[in-house]
Image 1 (cartoon, rainbow, N blue to C red):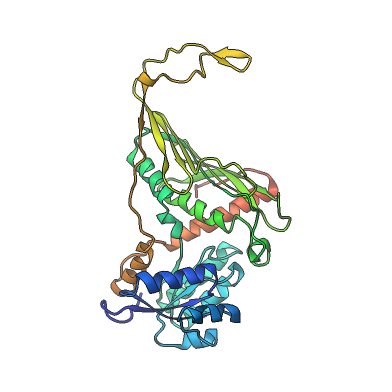
Image 2: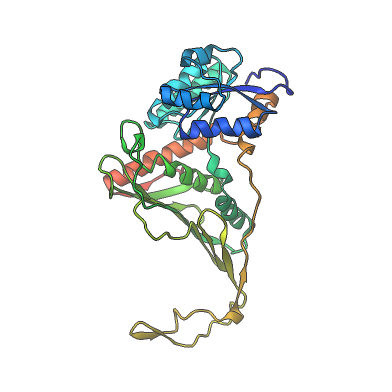
Length: 362
């Protein structure tokens, strides 16, 4: 991939789409990345958003063509509604720009993604997708638990995000603009699942899409995945939950980990004496049980969760290193290929009410 400028020279960036995420990108660059990334300006088709940018002292381009024709702009972040991603990405690559695209990279198919990858390769430019949830504290905690192996062999992982407000009443509620929770929060959580299983093949899945508060697009989903080595992994996004379940629930042969909410509240409970399995019967409903009697404190130990450090700015630091120094990107084409194929399989499973299997693994 051809690089522009010198290693010391900041990269000139412009944002297309100055909505919630577009303004977030712009703010982060202005406040924390000025040494490596320079915000040249933004463009939004809505004048109200252009004015909002100007009120922050940000230059607004009069048109997308003006933005893409500006030689100061080396890198473009596309933060528009989902249905416009492909067209804008291809347009920016045609103008010789490096491109960051907000998720989901496309709402249609893996074929769209391949078209964008091919255009980037032909232009000799970076094309990548913004996957900021790889730096969430709760995810990093779960990642360290899985990689550090404190629970022994992990056989089941549950990852959830629950809300109680349904689908937002904007483009996210419209099928034509790529709405629905699968393409919104689902992209994040499924990307996390795949990065946690980078070297483990997905064998099958079964998905349920929910339409409690919205008829046109899904307002939530559950997907049950089976990976190699007898690992099951459930991802659940629901928007009609008034009592939340844990963000992460991880089961291993020697213990259990629970991670609550967006932070890292929770604990790890491990067995300390496997041989001591005797239990005293306890009352369970109208009967008694020894099997489900809780373990006594002398056979378990409780540990605090690990607290690995993470910084979302690493994403843009990596972008700088890719463009200026030829470093490998954190978010790769193959990761996005796998993610899009997973999305397609979930839609097939949910719409046809069947298990989808992958003969050679995904």
